[in-house]
Length: 229
Image (cartoon, rainbow, N blue to C red; front, top):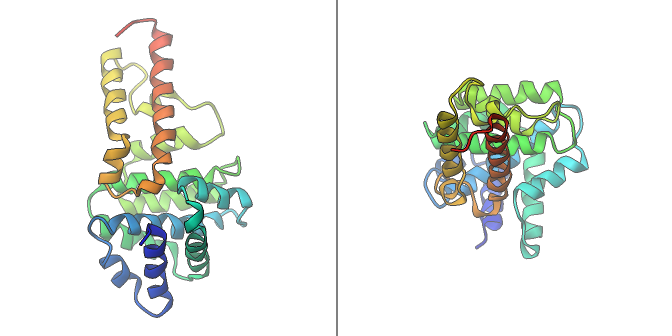
């Protein structure tokens, strides 16, 4: 059974009266945790897309870019999206259940927030209400502010991303320290590590975009200092 069929089954349980908590309780451990991750992005992404007043085609398309959907699973994925769109539970309820599911694994929760950023900026703008939404999710998830700022620097199109912000280091940090931060982020962004944290194989495109931003930030800092390491 594909991940999309498993997700559709889980969301169907919600529609037939099973509580949100009961569904997420079944998704706490691998491999089903990847199903929970995907439901979280779908549900929170659908609700966030309405935060700026409308759901655009770009935002729907962004969801399809985050999750690579093979042609044979498009029908199941469409059912998932429709079920999530119809659900009336508040986003804070979802966020709390997701926090309970992943516990103190803020790395997995940061991965999830990254998927939400991807969707938020897909229409070329970052609305203040989307910032408010993501800040509230950050608070519920317990993701620290430096991690949030790194994600924001990589995604929000209001200015050229600050390479130091992207790598989470101070502008006056010695180059060896910057290099260590870059290498740690590269290791943490490897698709295998993300999958081990619960990110489904279908969403590894997030790793590609993250890696591009991290490498670009390191190269910019290294070249601006003119010092080989």
